[in-house]
Image (cartoon, rainbow over all chains, first blue to last red):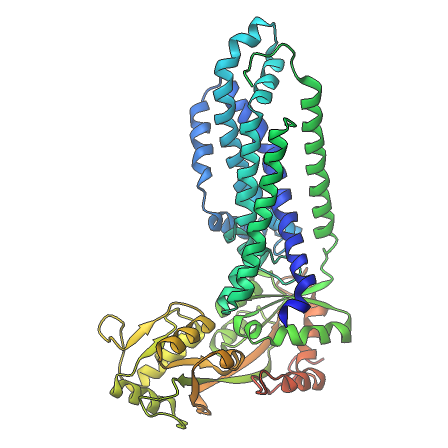
Length: 219
Length: 293
């Protein structure tokens, strides 16, 4: 009986999940990839420290990110005047904070690996500094795409931050993971499982599509 | 993919990058406009306890309010303590909770504008149909607990410091015994919410304390019966409190007040009284408008 009435609600939940996870992944990538390339290719003081920091933030607990962003966006907090708590944008802010270091870290590894092989060749061909960086990034594209995929995987499957910052409001900030938590807590195991299968299917479809792109040499 | 490549793949790469960047900016702007359009809020944010959500009451009630007044309500269902704190911070505009002592502190601190009683339900002792402690039909939960203790019948506690758990501990204190999972093999803590704990009690054939609303919602799938009800100390009172606009001027004051007054109006009270789950009425309206002009 639920299934019939809930088709529109399920698609709404899927839509919000994709919007939040997709936007967070994009922001995380736009910030994380250039920073990763910079750290991998540019010599500067404290580079090792920044690299270690990025890898540390890999394992940053999502609930802690959620708590920090909650305190930031709460009306008592420094950004409270924006009124972003319990909105999708607030969730995106929290998830972007989680994803940027992941994308950055994997980009560092990928670019560092190719740059060693590439450096002499590129210089021999007469590439200047900027061309050489772009070439290194281009050759590391498989690794960079992996970084984006891992980031998206983290975003779509993450529950702690979106629950605290989003509040799991029906029709507004309820995403697949928080819907699973809610249904499970109410012993609606069938509904929870349905959401779980949808979540898995989305992740599978996205990864399959990206892999296809990779194989065709698009990126 | 050797890395030794004669042409530098400038244009295609830069184009892909620019498209991704433009897409990101577009999505961010879309999200921003979606979120910022709602500021100042055209909806009311209600902070409430999980029982109001899990019983299905809010999903039933809110569409009527929205039809009547044109004001949208979004609700966050959390523990009583966090619900009041969201009001204290101004993150929620109105709270619907059942913790009279904590509510009085909230009012005394000046965070609430006014406080109206809305409805009540009660805690009930539920147990397996074979009733090993022989408590079926009692109306005194303290007596029932002492019989469970005497029979060493299995008892499942929430063990999560929730309102229901605190009520259970109070009952044990009236019995004069503090059961502990470490020393009493018949006493177990689930550490989970009410629905999950009821499921556990049903599977294990144990007694537990529940609010009647949550129990009625799940009764059909549980192998449990209500043994004790109508005990005066086990009554559970819900109040609605709009946040004081003196403390948080930018909250949706009018919407919050309209919601609080609608809940205790004859319209709201009639709907609460008419709400049934599986033929039973989980909430009994006892509203009184203390937020009037």
